[in-house]
Image (cartoon, rainbow, N blue to C red; front, side, top):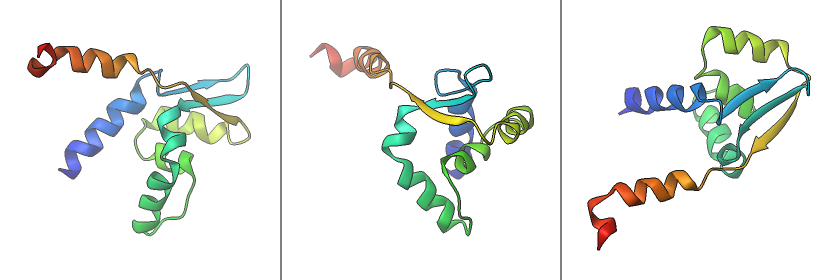
Length: 100
């Protein structure tokens, strides 16, 4: 199960709607879901014997290229992108029970 969660986290952060770096605005933009549950992610790091921030958590799941880019952007502001609730609506519409 850990491998599946790891794979899905990597996929999540590979999508621009969940993680992007805006060099012009000097911002790292993350999905708002990371703000809502920040302590869950950072507490998990603590359980792994690491202290850290939400960016430390994100770094675990990004490519080496993105990791290096984040490393160079240490003084960037972290902003959060609004969560796309339409994703939930589409998932609900696709389930067989949604028609009932």
